[in-house]
Length: 384
Image (cartoon, rainbow, N blue to C red; front, side):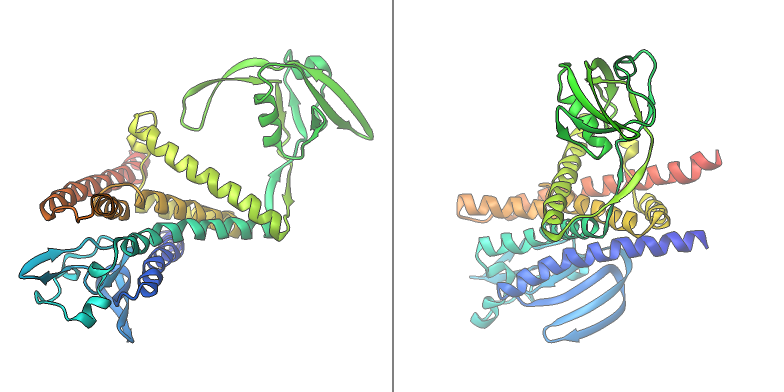
């Protein structure tokens, strides 16, 4: 039952992200007049399908991705020569035939992906990752309006012989301002102290019914950041009481806060990729479907807000990863189209084929690594 529950939350978390990604491709294709032949959630055998207009909408067996198949995406013949076309998504092989290996009529060319201007093709390919980022942004905005758990500035401990304790700060004090700038969240204290560069700070504190003021000089401290790297900073020697309140924002403020949070997660995702390439973040931290399912289950148990925040995080990761210039990913197709835009001619077919092969090897290697890490993490380690 536990496995089924986690599988349910895995599909519940991943399903909307796949749908939103493919919807981006689909809507931009329709906008530019491209005929969409198939819209599939999942890969593999068809579980359900219904054709509406020119498009067959599919639900397929393996919920690890999806695809849209557009007319002219596989390729075409023109002037007696075979032309292949870069498309969107990593379609199953059977979904990428050349378009009946014949000359297209003028009417067919108007709805063919390969015959659209390069800027239109760029827009169609870019829409998938962008929709994932926009989806995460909307989730963060909604979360800000329905309430965000926030750790208050109440002090749980003033560490002995540290600057705060020496200055007179006590357990139970509530910090209300740093250098006359109001604060109400614990992370604002950390930011204020870090920004001091060791210069004296004036902390305003509420103690019972009194408001007190203390001048404190932060001391140097070596700590570790999110990536485990040692960083030099400053501290005053206080620990949070762990008091949590729910903070609510109006629509306009929620848009600002949601935008800030989306930007932070995008930056963190890019930094994580850089740190992984630098081997700062170990490769065994890469997770696959089992890890996502496990985390989805845990976040769902923590509450709806935590689960939605997890979906937003995965959506941003999906969007950013798809923008990497790796052939078979959206970013790889974008790279080809940008080169076509610069050099005024398509990238040679042989170059694209070799690049696609390299990209497929890289992608398969990453998938193998992710599955291997999942097996070690959840089966070998726990049973060893």
